[in-house]
Length: 312
Image 1 (cartoon, helix red, strand yellow):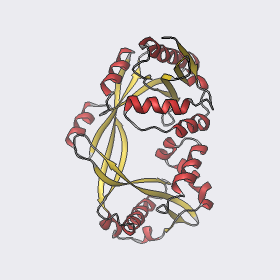
Image 2 (cartoon, rainbow, N blue to C red; image 1 turned 180 degrees about the vertical axis):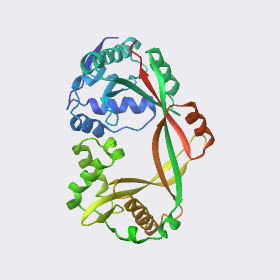
Image 3 (cartoon, helix red, strand yellow; image 1 turned 90 degrees about the vertical axis):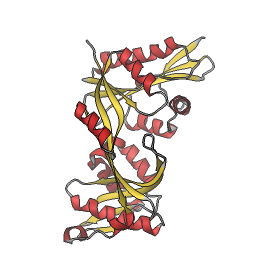
Image 4 (cartoon, one colour; image 1 turned 90 degrees about the horizontal axis):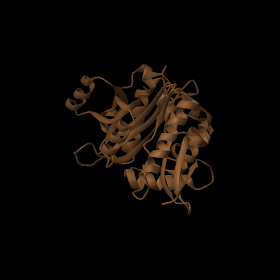
């Protein structure tokens, strides 16, 4: 089969084709608009994404890399996602060339690769990275606690918590929301550029009447929005929960508790009282103790493995 090799270019429909390939092969969701926003917002080099296409322009495979904002000097390289009819040597070629480009042009301290567990391609991707001299370094865990909405809504508001006020956000709050997003370590990783944060708040957060802002001295110090969604953990049956997307200024710890109380009240007003409010946080661990402890603790889930490239 004759194939064509390309790097990223905007306005060529590559984002839509990339999304289709990823969803078909991985079985996981993807969004073409998000891909486009990340290239623009993070000012990525066009050489950081490589494609294999048929002569008539149909995407067969792609691979990409980007800086890991939370870890300066580290770049994440993806698995070379490929359709079954893509020649294996083409799939290998774009990965090897992108890896070489990273080493010779970007010179990152660490080149990492992440593989999420419990997907149809987990074993395949692990074997691929190991064949490319990547070694296992860390595991990614999520620690989750389910709270009763009625109980949370009745939490005592001491003087410190009561000193904050609450209201629904509007477009007039956009600049402050972008600012608080980038003041929160986790949210800054999710939306590393101003453009991405602005898009989220304009098109998702502020269009949902469930959003809540916590105010102190006319300043937004915390913001959050509840989302109903279905989740599945391991072999357990699917469960519907209320998850919370939030940002907070670290110097206002009491604002987070006030936010939970107000979010719980909002959920109850919406008739969601039978759903748990799930609060989650991500953390990395590299010791065997972390791996085995996660197996013993029901609220801790081992969700992914992180590999690092060994150059020597």
